[in-house]
Structure formats: structure tokens, C-alpha cells
Amino acid sequence: MAIDQYRYTDHERKEVIRTQWCKEHLKLLVNHFSKKLIYLGLPGIRALDILDWIDFLDKVIVFQCSDYKEDGDTSCNADFSELESLLESLEDGEKIKTYALFKGFIEDIVIGGFDEDGSIFNLSDFITVYNLDFCNGLTTPRTTRTLKGDVIQYLKIDVVEKLFEYQNTLSEKSSAKNFLFYLTVHSNFLESKMEEVKSREISNYRKKYSKIKKGKDAITIRDLKAYTFYKLSKIFKNLSFHFEFLPPIFYQGSSYPNREKGGKYEHHWMLTFTVLGSKVKEEEKVYEQDIKTFLENKFIFASNTNIRIFTDNHLPFRENDYDPNPVNLLKESYVYNNYWK
Image 1 (cartoon, rainbow, N blue to C red):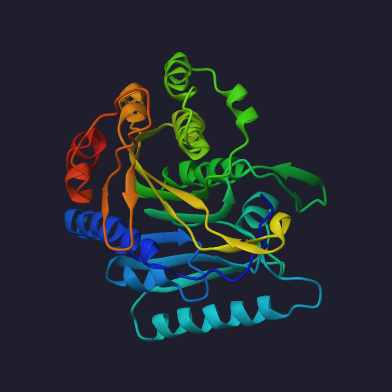
Image 2: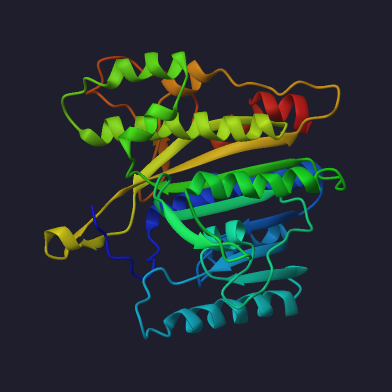
């Protein structure tokens, strides 16, 4: 589906996720360690997640671009200035200690190594909360150039890997070892990408839902769930991070005009993944989460008012129930109890 990219419009589902899910995690994390967090993310010009979580943040590293801009459109510069002014006011008011703001697509900056103004991208702090809120799919390709001018093509998952390569290096000189990672992506997914997944558990899982007769979305979000777990797990394991996924949240995103249907406005489904992480010590082995349990647990659904377990009655198999309370899920996790504590 070809979707025109306009300015992001906040809505009730996003507010529910920010305040009833993420904020509860951050509150617990800060109270537990008695230390505020270092944030890296895509907050948009209104910086709603930063403002909602301001009591728990120390430093922020931010990326801002206008992926709806066209030739001659100067709104990108205006958006950048608006976000910069907001961050300056937070710093001046001592709400945060400091900030770094990069101009352009996070993908181009992290992979290419510099932003649209030529500022070199580097990290000097171990990131303790990521919020990568992408407007398109995890497997949507993008092309950019490196500092040397070489043309390269990559996926969102490549950006995540590059960020955690930085994280791995920083862990050697930082006292911080633990992080929360939020990843939000469009449910559009290239089914062919599942050919990259070499996992018997995932193959068995796919056989269970591949014959769903009603609702293509039910198949797509489960493919994306399995693919994301598989790809992120490989990154975390290769870079020696303990990791544990909480149940993913799916919700209806903002509406955008579909070019293929004459500009008709349509809603689209989004998924938010939550990962608890911790740097592996020399004497430890990487904790490997039980993939079967993760895959067969029910999704969490975010409505305009709350988050709740989602029961899909069209499935040819039963998924597992659990308590969706965000604090309980975190407190009961293996990583929290064995590495964070």
C-alpha cells in the first residue's frame, strides 16, 4: 500500500502506550536504580514521549526529519527549529541535563555516520531507554551514502544492529549495563523475508496460523512478531546482551491517504515491541528466552482508553493468557530478576 507521509498526528492509542505501558516501566526502572535514564529516540516536533517521561530522563539524543517533505518544502527546517527550541527550554529549565539533536532520517545518520548539516554521529553514553518509533515497515529498504560517499541500501533492522554495536562498545567504559528498548513499526511486512528465518520453532508456529481463512492482518502481525524476535535475538546474542521480549502491543495507527485508492484515508496497524536488556558479564552465558512461549502468548491490544489481552477467535489454535499489567510483566521477567536486580 502506497501511503503519503504527512505530519504525524498524535492519537489516544499512542498516549495509552506512552503513559500506561512505557511510563510505568520507566518509573520502576528509575526507582529501582535511583538514577535517571539516557534516552535515544524519535520524539517528533512535540516531543510527547519526552514530556510524558521527563521526570525519569537525564539526557536525550534525538533525531528529527520530515519524511513528508517535497522539493521546495521548507517545513523540515521549521520542524527542526521547533523541536530544538523545546529541547533548549527543557535544558534551560533544568528538566534535562543536556540534549543532542540530529537532523535527518535516523537510518541515514546512524548508518551513514553524519546528519544533513554534516554533524558527525557518535555516542558517548550507554543508552538506557530507546524509543525507535518508525512510521514504516521493519523490512522497508532505504538507500543512503556513507561518509566516503559509497551508496548503501539497508533495512530498519540494520539500524538497530548498528546502534547496539555502539552500545556494546560503550558498555566497556560505563557503569550502566541495563536498558529498555521500544521498537514501533508498521505492520506492512514482506512475507518473502521469512525465508531468512532458520528456526524450527518459528516454522512450527507459522504452520499453526498459515491457514487462517479470515483476516490477512492476523497472519501478517504474527509473521512480523516471529521475524522481529528472530532478527533482534541474533543481534543481541552476537553482541553479548541478555535480552527478553515482553508481549508485543498492536494498535490502530493514524489515518493517511492511500495513493493507490485515489487518496482515500485509511488506518493501518502498528506493532510496538518491548525488550529488556543487560550486558553479559565475562562469566555469564547469554540468557535465551523460550521462543515457543513468546510466540504463543497472546498479543496486547491498545485501545483509546487502555491496554488489554487480545483474544483472536479466528485462530485455529489457542494462544496463552497472562497478566498484561506492565509492572508485573517486568517484575516477573527473568532478566529483571537475574540481571537487573
